Amino acid sequence: MTAEEQIARARATRARRDKYWTLADIPLLVAYCITVGMSLRSDEDNPLFGLVTLSYAIFTALRPLIVDGRDDRQLLRALRAFSIAGAVTLLYLVVDVIRHSTDDGYDPEPGTALWLFSVIWLLVNVAMQWGRVWRRQENAGT
Amino acid sequence: MTGIDDQIARTRAARLARQRTGFLINIGTIVVVLALLQLLPDKSPLIGVAVLGLAASNAVMRLFVEGRDDWQWHRAVIAFALGSAAGLASLLIDAATIELLDSEPNSPGFALSITAAGWLIADLILRIRTAVPSDEDVTA
Image 1 (cartoon, rainbow over the protein chains, first blue to last red):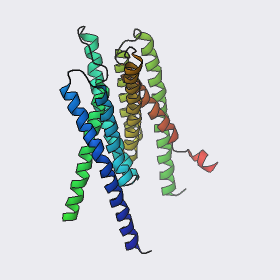
Image 2 (cartoon, rainbow over the protein chains, first blue to last red):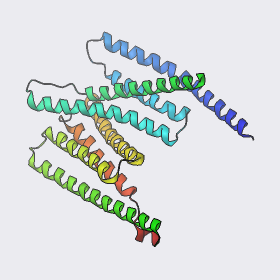
Image 3 (cartoon, one colour):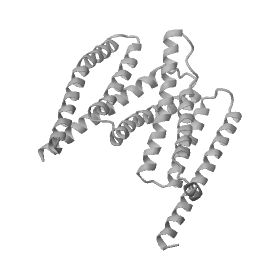
Image 4 (cartoon, chains in turn green, red):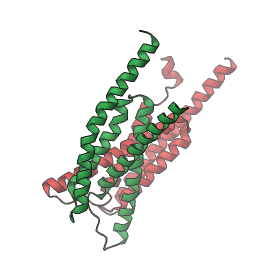
């Protein structure tokens, strides 16, 4: 097999993975939007919201690893996104602990840190994904 | 011994010395954490902040002791991500037990302590696993 054939086959495999992943992405996105809508309409906290957000964040984190490959660069990128979410959550936890120690009337909601972690992780993953698409288009243009 | 061999040996010796310093700092950090846990009142939420401060200072110290090349940065990110994963697992277990078993939530600062302890332990394990072998180890 020539180098060109190998490249063409790798590109076709990537495009196929991308298509299947996008097909799986659509129902999950719809489920996520429904859960967000339900949470916004309801007065009480919806426990499903945090769980669905975390699932969706894991799904978006897995996408580049499965579609683009699991080389060192991709793994490091995934770790960086996870670490950013971890850092923001840590900041929240530090503020939470200090407020708890100094303010007697402070009553934190359990699950907020989990929700925050999931949302930030999801946002960073989506931003990185769009950044990659944008860069790919830029490279194709030049 | 040629000039290059001499330089390589000197670089290896310097790296080994820095790693030994880093290892001593790790041991010192653990001792300070244990002392703090004894000093602070039981379940004080500030324990988490203290452990986190030590984990952060340990990570910064490590970058200064062992250099700030790409691999060291990667290792720092991996250690932090592992710590965050431990914290996330603790938050998930807490949320699940509240929802399913109707139990009391963990004390404030618990997730913080788990994250910081996970960060410290991951850093220590990565340091031991990726230690550069000494000349004696190489020749043996």
